[in-house]
Image 1 (cartoon, rainbow, N blue to C red):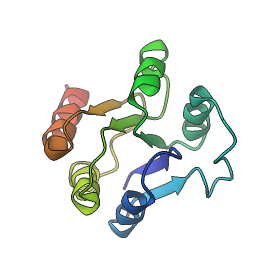
Image 2 (cartoon, rainbow, N blue to C red; image 1 turned 30 degrees about the horizontal axis):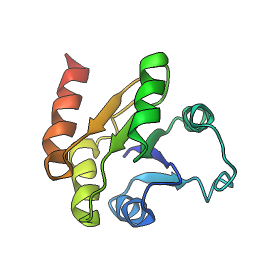
Image 3 (cartoon, rainbow, N blue to C red; image 1 turned 90 degrees about the vertical axis):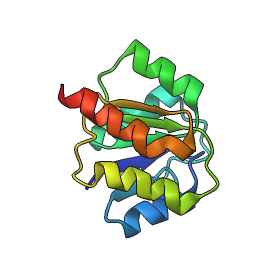
Image 4 (tube, helix red, strand yellow; image 1 turned 30 degrees about the vertical axis):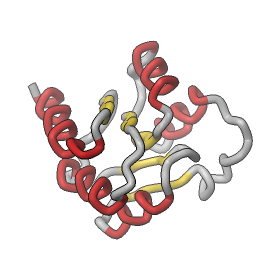
Length: 127
């Protein structure tokens, strides 16, 4: 299963659902790093030091960080999705083998098509 680190803007309900599905998900609150104004680059560095992919809704900043330096443990950015369980299950279904992995980047623009976007990203990674 995947090792994930949720940025403080990422819904706790999705994190909880990912845990139910067997993923090792850590929140910024649990890590003692919430509400401190920590720079996004430090969020990525911390997650990478824990070998975790970042989960975030902060698309603009994390896309820029990925483009500047792809040496991270993974970043999953997405738009808001109000169907929490469905979104968590899409992440799980396409990543239950835990291979999202290092240097991967996934931008989910359409939460309703998350499954296809994740699948396509994983296929690109194996090519």
